Image (cartoon, rainbow, N blue to C red; front, side):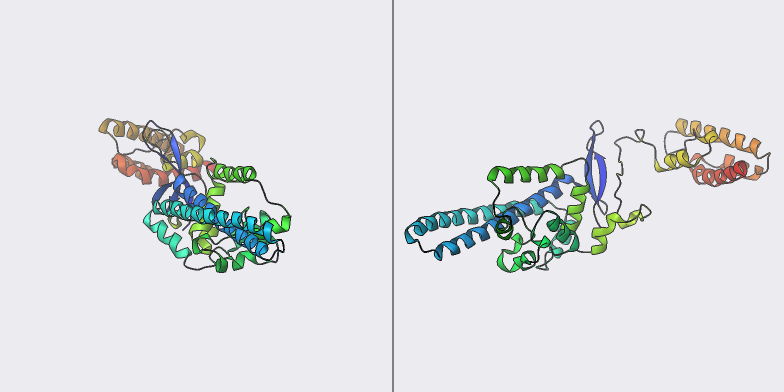
Length: 323
């Protein structure tokens, strides 16, 4: 049961807002993106703590005691600040997760009961594509849950000690800020592919649910997976119903203007009923009175019951028109 893209209008006169659909629930995209950003920030801070620990260990093994003592003091101060920073990021993640709907929160928590939950193919490929440890044979990502805090374990960030050692340089704070801004921008982009892909891999334990966005468009809607927009309008007149869209796609040109009767006022229903009766009169002429019984039954039906009969009769009409 993965995410799918949906739209909703908050108020009748306001523009539609992009949302994520999960089961029968509409979730604002900020709720999901805030969790993803908070997780990345905590993972980044946790990996920076490992960098400081390795630096502290290297300084202890150094020979220059005077220079080492000064640098050790700086590292100890940085470690204290880093621990404070990690506590703040843990709080940010807690508040972001608290905004999740209860069924989705259960999925999120259940996935993280396994320490190596993040070692799934989609996230491994993502780490390798960004030049992380999964591209190499060091195995840092797989072992990271042993040396990091529980909530901070995961794949590489810009502060991964192994990646810094491999590329022989560290990014400046300005560059790190640019990368963080780029990630936040991608999560807020109107094209929700990045958000849906990350959301499915970070929230759902079932591999079938995670990879279900790649399934065909024939997937049953009850499975909760539709990767194309589903529009929800504030008013009924703004968009055609699914039945009207079916008529526009399937009807012969002579019947393109047909609109099926919906529950409305008595005057509108009778007006639409007359329109359908007129179309059936044309059908009757084309078929040369070969199906008069169906036409008479249709004319005796109430406007609300003509919908299904119209579709069945239309199939028969199209068959006779195109043979």
